Length: 326
Ligand code: BTN
Image 1 (tube, rainbow, N blue to C red):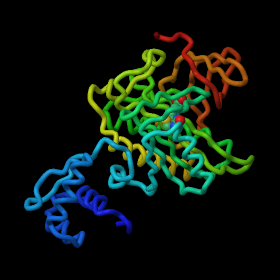
Image 2: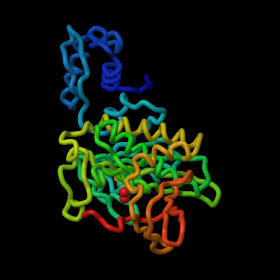
Image 3: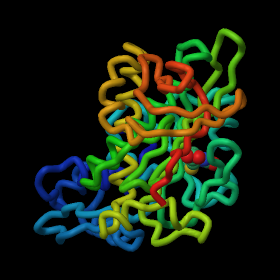
Image 4: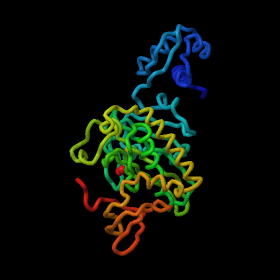
């Protein structure tokens, strides 16, 4: 246990790790205090939103955490090596905060989470709808030892981790729209924004920003036709703490694998859930507009397109369907 952890943190961690209820006497022994003091701590935790069943005589059992994304709720659930959580009630954008921490040298895996963003950013200069108390907005500091030109692949890898977590935690089937939109039943449930600071040959850091619409009950009119939340699709509320812990573990696992083996081993998995496969699309990029049928993604994560002029490889751009269903 980390030194400096409070009695509350320790009680939560022990109850979380225990297979059986822990008695007040056992908690008192571990903390080196009286059973009455343990009882007071448990009451304070309950008042702060922790669901703890039981009495000090029979033993305490942790059955639920408060719906709050911070180090206290996430700490006991983190499964990987990334441990630093910076939690904010409100900020303009977690991307900005994470970038500042990265410049100051924070450790890899530092994750900034905000309950609400006042200027959440999306890809291509768009904004990201970020109301309070409903969704997940996080930015993870990465220091990949790859050439800057390979960093766009990371966005695909992270998209895959998000889609995997959506499917695993909600039972919904998540699809990926290249490069990294996560769709459920054709509507966007999550997005990934990767931003990098680099020199020509060396990446200083990448900020992987992930927004997941978990419990949003609705969207502003301009998004209503294209966006959705896991709650709207599954018909039940999502456990934000459980989802976030699972997502961070999935991102870390995929990231480590990417650093060791590159994107190629994940290509098949990515294509299995590609929403665009076989579809006629239009890609708009700084180089103009290209139309064609999607063949798949290649080992570098580029989109392969069959066009009237032959096969083309797309490394960046905004994709729209040529014949949208809606
Ligand atoms: C997209 O346009 O699909 C990407 C959306 C990324 C949104 C997330 S929310 C957390 C992080 N902070 C931001 O300002 N943006 C990203």
